[in-house]
Length: 489
Image (cartoon, rainbow, N blue to C red; front, side, top):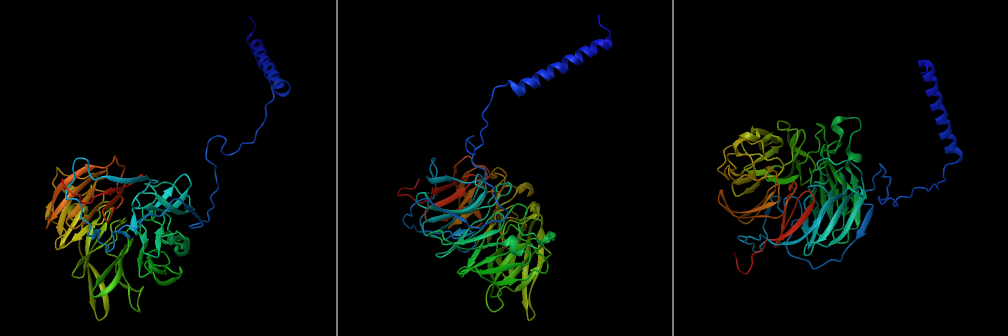
């Protein structure tokens, strides 16, 4: 046997010789290969495009279909024409459904999100995010057939954060206004989709270097735009608490100062008339305010309170009458009753009662409906024994409900939408079952229910236009025929 050191030397020499041989083969004797430049698309992957940090809002337009007949019925904005989530359309609707449920007229696939539809003149408008194109899109569909007519879009890249789009367009005969996930505003012609103007709220009203100067909320923009007398009303926060933009020109015609650095929440601006004065009521992050909506002082802060300022707010305020409103907070924050007073010195606001979600009316994200003297809602998961139940409160008592559906009748995770037409209440749970209730004063009687689809997070507000009900989950939008037939079931 070789001595140990000699053995090691032999092995080392052999390895060196082998390495040298392989190297010489690689240089002189290996087969030649053609080097081909990689061309996007040859590997069956979509072309990769660089997206600039400079967003060109509304840059692109696609014509996709031909307009069809105008149909009666409209749902022109968040919570409908009167901001109350109640359809006043005279179309007779079915009193009940058979086992097949209401017919699905059409359906379409959307990007992941919770943005609801607006409807006018036979067209359905929905804001959507195309993840493959990295594009925020206003898409226009035929109400009758679901055919997509056109889309106005632009590139803006950001990461998924519980989906993307969340807002509902505002539409009139002359304008459609949208707010995208990163606070980009578009105004387009509702018929042909022509871009009229745009505003980057983050760029125009953000305050660089200040934490409270950021415009877009953590989970992206949830505020739905408002068009009032051809003026777009928006609440950016940052450099301006609220602004009014002339829809014809895109010119900002008034701004509300923001000395308290109130920030954009997920709630939407709701017009209310209090003490005979029309005002825009907004539950911002940091407080609730009322801004003059008419007269020489339009855009002026009439009242403000910072005594109600939950960290997250999604459901919008509801006017109760008698100079009182109720504002909501999410994640267990509950609700607060706010009284607006007026004297010779002006207006003032006071929080006169408040409670957690387990102690009275509350909602995680859907705004309760006021019908006559009663508020209807589905309580959230953190509402204690009444969690996920449909409940009714008299507006004079926001703590003790006058009716609830009972512990055997809970609806998903308490996150799904509900909408009224006459005495009919439609409730969609998170998983795609649609319930039809008949409202009798302060009681709801379940008439029918049907599993419409195997839904994922069916959280978007619904819309009723004529005989159609439009609903969606995180990925699909459906149009149902809920009209009364010749023979009722």
